[in-house]
Image (cartoon, rainbow over all chains, first blue to last red; front, side, top):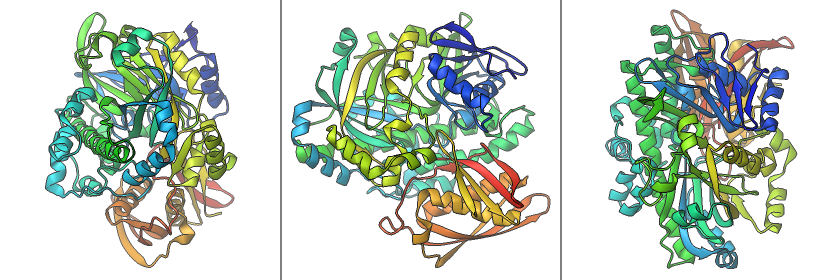
Length: 483
Length: 139
C-alpha cells in the first residue's frame, strides 16, 4: 500500500486514495506540517503509524464516505487517535478499535461568575481545596460505594442517577451530550468483573491525560457565537477531563476477546488485530453496543459526581459560586446518529476515537440556547498552553459526520518526555508563568509536559481553516490538577 | 535486561524478555506494573492466583496482562513478582501467581494508570538469544 502519496484537496484537506482493500478513501484534516509528521513515521518504518491505521479502518465493511482523521491525529491502537469512522446499520460493523478502553472519556466545563483577577487573588487556597475534594491519581477511590444492584442503576441512569442521588442538579442535564444518558444501555451485557472494578471509582478523576483546570477566556474570535455561549474576555471556567474509569476499561477488555471470536465467526477480514468487530445487526454486535452505552452512562454519572465535588471544593473559597454547566462532550464513543449520505438520510453507527461530536447549527441534539450557532466543542490543551472552545459547523456535518478534534494530540512518546522533562522543574517554570499545577505523580507531570504535545494553536487553526469547527474562544490555565 | 518500555506517541509499549516464553510473560507483567508503580517498593508477601486461556500464545499474553489489571483493581493490590506456567491443549492455558501487597499510595509511588493491554504492536521475537513478547498498553 502506498501511504506516502497523499492528494492535496486544499491546504487543510488531504486524501489518502482508495487502494487495495480500502472501501473508501482516507481523509485527513490537517496542514502540510501535520501531514509530513505522519509520513515521517511511515518512512521510519515504525511499528505503529497513523496513516496505516487510517487505511486499515477504510477496509472495514460498511464504512461510509471516508476513514477520517482530524488535525490532532496520532497513532492509536486500531483506529488512530483523532479518528472517525461511520458505519451503515445494515452492512457495517461495530469495532473495538474505534472506541477503545476509556469509553466516553469526556470534557465538562462549568461556568463561574468570576473574572481572572478574582482567581489570581485566591489561586493557592482554591488549588488546595480542589486538590483535597476531587480524588485523583492511580489507585484513588471515591466516597461513593456501590454494590452490584446499585451499579446497574448507574449504567442505566447515567447523569440522571447521579442527580437522583444528590450529586448535581436537574438543570445540568440540558447541557450534557445526550442529556447525560443514552437509551440502549443493558447492564446484562456487562460482566460482573467490570461492575466490581467500578465499586469505588465513581467520582474519581483517574490519571494520565486526565485533569481538572481553572481557566479564563483570554481571547474571543467570534463575537456573535461568544454572545450566544455567554462568554466574555476574562470570564472564568472550570473544566475537567476523565472517562468511565475501570468499568469502561473492563468492558473493552471483555469484548476484545468476544469480538475476536465474532470476527472469525462472520469471516470479517481485518488488517489489525485491534480492529476486532462484529456486524452491527448481529446479536454480538448489539450486545457490544449496549455494553458501550453502559460505559457511556457510567462516564456521565462519574462526570456528574465530579461536577458536584468541584462545586463543593470551589464553594470553600468562593461560597457564592453555583458553577452552572457550560457544556459536556464525549470522546471514545460509538453513537447511533442520522447523517446524510449521497443525498439520503441514513442511520449510522459513528465511532469517534479521540475525537468528539461537533454538531452544526440547527441539530435538535444541541441545547436550545446554543442551537442556532452549533454545539460548543471543548478542546483541551496542555497544562502550560491553552484550551479552545470551537463551534460545530454545517461543513463538519457533511465532511466528518459532525466530528472535531479532542485535544492537541501528542507529538512525543511518554518515554521520551520522561527523559526530557523533570516534573519538579516544570512546576516551577509554570508557576513563574502564573500557572499553578499540582499532581499526584511527578513522573506523570513530566509525561504530560506541554512540549510533548503538538502545538494546539496549529491543530485548532487546521479545524478552523478547513471549516470543520470554527474558533470561538481561547482559554488559558490558572490552576491545573493532574491525575 | 528483563524488560523495557517502548516508544509510542499516545500510549506505552511494554516488552518482557526471557529464556523461555513463560519468563517473557513474567517480565512482561513486570514491565506493565513498572509503568504504574515503583516495583522496588512493593513487598511480594501475598499471592494471587491467575488463570486464563486463549486460542494463541500472543492472545494469551493479553489475557494474562488484563487479568492482572482486573485483580489489581478489584483486590486493590500492587504486584511486583510473577510466576507463569503455560500448557497447550485445544487452547493455550495459563496458570500463574502474582505476588504483591495491598496498594499503598504513599509507599508504592504511583505513576500512571494502565487501562488495558491491547493487541496493538503485539508480537513475539528474538533478541540477543532471548525471547521477547511485547504489546502496547493503553494509559
